Image (tube, rainbow, N blue to C red; front, side, top):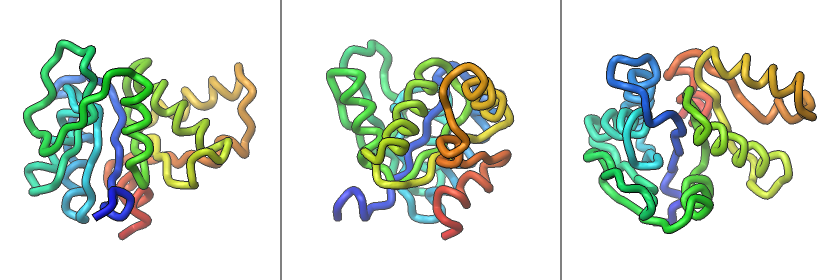
Length: 178
């Protein structure tokens, strides 16, 4: 089965959030919901949001693909079913992006900003065929508005993004309600 037909959704988010954080709980629910709908989830493979989404998917019997990096000293999370190791950050990003039919980003740090920015830029330039990029949580609205205020980002650029307040809405958007 080809990876495109396999229905892979990549989930981006912070590695530093803990089990009691809102992001962890949301990512866990996203993993559960996607696995229930037959989607494979793909993450960076480590802690925080990546672990939560992986854990949620595994609890529903789903496949979890982790794109890890040989340069990191951390061990991947224990919920991965499959792992792809890369040598460089850009290779890792490319693997996270190219395999996926859609993306959900939760609040995170500069790594998450990098991931969202690269996907968004690839969608803007047509390098990546149109697919959903969903930003989950109220923080993203303020971030995108700040970018629009201080950078050259048009309303047409923003129209490539989808915003969601709940895991259920994010999953409905990224799966087209299927």
